[in-house]
Image (tube, rainbow, N blue to C red):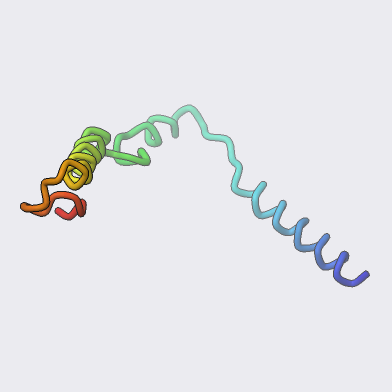
Length: 75
């Protein structure tokens, strides 16, 4: 009985915390949020390039090239 009450209170508290993070963004604030440094990946081209390099190095081990650091993904 006590554990169900505690579980109910905890879930209610968790729901209140989650819902308090939701807010409406005004039109004038959207310009600030759309800036490149606010993005999850501010440099998407750099992320793609590093992924390509990492994939090439990992594929070097499969083709049998063991010299030159290929295969481990090290930089």
